[in-house]
Image (cartoon, rainbow, N blue to C red; front, side, top):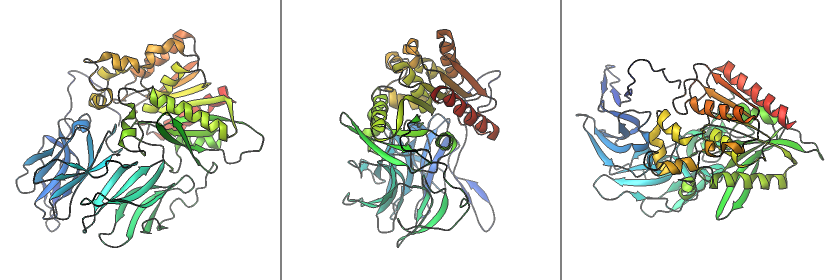
Length: 484
């Protein structure tokens, strides 16, 4: 969201997001959880006497990365910390007998972008247990069945999936996996019935229901939409011990014997993934304009297990960037891409990786950096969400400034030769506009073609429709200018 401009005495705003109960018969609303706890997610116990909650004291915006698992008594509102996790948690859910809370635990860079292993936390005491320690996937949501089995959705090797785990034996089963994305997944307490918002590269989102993996559409809200791109292809490559995956989205009509320009689109996060979902914004626009679009999932992404997601800790811009470059090498072997007409683009972490890329190589002939980070050291003191950085860099910038400098594009800025378009919201509290100004100013000083566009009253995500349209037009024009 667009951050309110500061004026006068600058203070941290403490938001409240609390659990409340409404009595259906009387309409009376009663707030249950304490006012000093910002609750991100919760679940009601089977006996109705308490909630489990993923919550943190203080600012909800900045403290997600130190959130703990609590129980909250319904009658008194007293909150008790059950587990202070070493990393981030999401999706707390009570077991059917009320004795255990299951959560997803892992390295997560954004609240709401969930991925990790499934842990069982006993309420009677004892250590939380990782139920999926060797899983080569990242759980995204979970629910219990009355039998005690846990169903979960997952990122898995670029695809999406539904799995189950038996907390008693640790046995994991894959119930379905495919090149689709499931949103708002729900399953019947008993039997095979399930429902979700289902989408893919070729099919726009619709509500579907049926046995897991055999869903049928219930809605036709987007039935008139047809792809402006060709069939997506999953690409794999090796980089040392890492097995990496990405998606290649071609133009709708690829002519034999012709070579095409390509743009590498780096996802945000970094704890996220490029998924087989209906393309939006420049992911949709660029293939419609004759570009191949390569969407890599380098180390730091979801879909290959927790060790892979943690693979860029204290190493931003090094192993993960090398994964992307090796992915480009693989693409040009298997697709009609002109190696002299490759660009790179991204937003947030993707914007950072774009700024980083042009300091490391001249291979990319044009770049678009949206809400990118050019200087991790100055960024630490500018943003309103600095707590997210410690799990990724190992310490604050004041304790270990060198680890931040090592991954900062500004450290190597004199290497840049690539024309780069810089985009930013003017009220972005997550990646403040000084980062965009610093990069743009450096490129101007060095004589590198560049342009900076700042969008009024926009935060980290650009929400205004006219601003979104303006970005798409500028992105296409920039790449057309340098790649066609």
